[in-house]
Image (cartoon, rainbow, N blue to C red):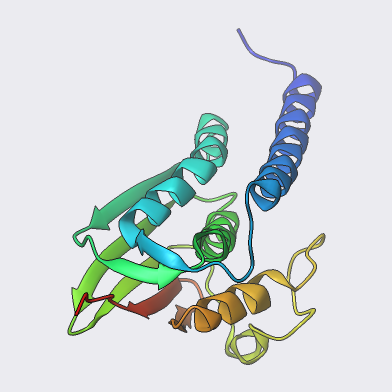
Length: 193
């Protein structure tokens, strides 16, 4: 049975509003759950990535149910421990992954997350097949208040970069218009002496 276009549009708007509210609620909940800015412990980075993926699965499921097919590929071939503030790293990854998903809204795409080690560092690669970032915007990507979103604050990537670097990590971005974007994040692997 065909659904009236107005009903379908209203349902899509309800789903989007629900997702927006759920995202805000998740962020508030995570902020209040034992967050301590100075606390750094040893964490399994794969576990942090999986927790972050669990937080975005709902949005992927909703988008896919609305006909926006976004495939999630996980290739986590490493189990290193890093010394970090787990909340800051999880929120940084969440921001980058949500941006990747949003870059593919309205089109089919692939979101790939890889975890691998090279020498004494572990690498997290977050890659999307969205619209990519223009060279002009690449220069402004980590600047405060830079956003291409209608309701964006321009703080997400700036805070993510700062948090990653504060926890001993490094972040690089590669993008090509029309092909997508790749964030490459690395951390030193913790070795017990």
